[in-house]
Length: 432
Image 1 (cartoon, one colour):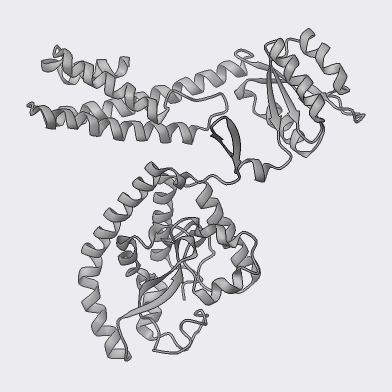
Image 2: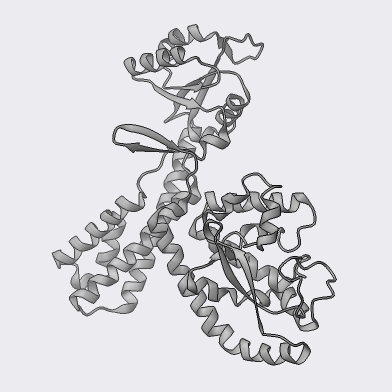
């Protein structure tokens, strides 16, 4: 708030005394901050997540800031406002990073720490202990573990019944319990003990893969666990992605397809008979079929909907080989994006004949249909594009698709688009 107001005074001295404008700037910042959660971060928060929230805060605040002048019709010096907004974003980002760095150095010095113990001895608890011991900047002082299984490890403190006295005598702040170690009665006893002595209990699940996808919802007062949670389930995220799709696809259609289409029409027609556009039925959102558009890169053949293009495929024309090598043949799919059938980034849509085969090969294959298919995707920029030669090709493609769905954010989309363009310019081994 100090940076916000000092910057406003420096770049807008002539209107700083306008109390309504100053009030608007401060209230809009705080209101937006409530929704972007820029002030909510823990000792284990990741810096990319913090920076992402700051970026959205700045973008929305900038829109609100300009809206004030649009609604009030006040005179303004445009360059001053640009400098002010740039100053706010850079200064707040810098001070936030400096604060995190200083806090972590402070914790490394032995301050602002939490004393912790672990109950259980298994793979999950071992990973947690390793985290405590190697990431000292987060401020966790690991004291040892308890287990009814005898252990020769140096950090073994005794059986589970001995945990209570140890916690009281050693000023323990947090107790991490492995769910696979404790019986329901034992866990309840530990939670009751922690509540009565102002200690924090945290649970270590048996299955990282299962719990990481779990979302708790309340139906009245009844807690219900949803096994999968996707960022694009949130309406606001779907709006962001759809607006980006509309803007990006419109620019491609107006700036590239508008002049490239008639040019390619002549070249493709000169080499082979048939339409310029190749239309193929593919699986889309929810597994529903849709008509996918491409520039035709093969001679007209009856196997186009059954057999995927292979290396040295005789069906590919000379012009088609260039189109496929540069991925230009995929550009008409931006029409699908504008229509809402596809997204700029997402899992690549497969032919129906392929999907019927892959469903029986790859576990959770249909999860990739929870979102719209994309013109490009994470799997493609990671090397899993084009021909499926072995089972591992499709298995790894699906793994990347699911990772994308479960970890979507705007920055990931931008990175994938950048890598797609880079790979198209440099050439890809499987672009045939």
